[in-house]
Amino acid sequence: MSNFNWSTKRVVITGGAGFVGRYLVENLRRAGCKEIFIPRKADCDLRDIGNVRRLYDEVKPHIVIHLAATVGGIGANREHPGSFFYDNLMMGVQLLDEAYKRGVEKFISLATICAYPKFTPVPFKEEEIWNGYPEETNAPYGLAKKMLMVQSQAYRQEYNYNSITVFPTNLYGPNDNFDPKSSHVIPALIKKCFDAIDRGDKEIVIWGDGSPTREFLYVEDAAEGIRLAAEKYNSSEPVNLGSSFEISIKDLAHLVVKETGFTGKIVWDTAMPNGQPRRKLDTSRAEKEFGFKSQTDFPEGLRKTVEWYRGQAR
Image (cartoon, rainbow, N blue to C red; front, top):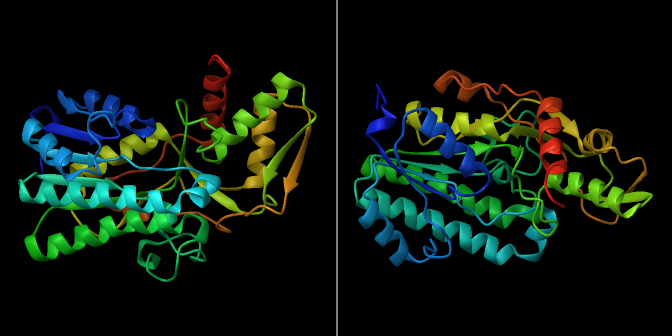
């Protein structure tokens, strides 16, 4: 797929109205893509094979980028392991199978760093992805997403079908999900601080002891990485998307407190789970294979995210 020309492609982006999706849509439009189709869950539940077939029959896409997912933080994963497994597995497996059957040129699926083993050596290299079981609180979600890589490899081996699986690290940025029932750590902390300021609270409570580390990738950088992978990467071997920046939850919390202006105390609830001890990706494959390197440094990205949330009606 050399000399890739987005202006000639009809593209389906599942989850295109979501957090990552809206940035990817904007990125592809800047790259010249004119025909982008976004199925909405309300009228196209992708767990239903009939809806998947109807979508493909109506749009006849050249490219499918599968971002749609049932996701959430540690709490949501603990409460809904069954639906997180089922929803993510069924959407992905059926979308990829039907894409192959219809001769869709290329299928790109977004997996998750949660698929890596709990005690993966840092930085996480793609070769380590099978060397252990994922962190327990989000294992059903991580394994469901990991199966898309297995399917991609199997379909390439048997049918020579071109699909790829991208493994992004934790994403953040403006327009993120700030619902405390399902949000990830950065939006959850930002909302927690602003809610405390609004109520005049003297402290905020955060799960765990603050020792785990995480790597974060700004959402606009993630969209750029997905586009480059769609254009240039044609292997079913997993590929990481990250920033190579690692920060502890404790240090993250102090940065968020500073940016939001919360002046109270942080209380660590050590009775609650920490999650995976460390997360940091080796991003050399993405840089080598399709020239991706993140551009947004973390303090700048965090500042933009806090400012966006500050400007919303809360």
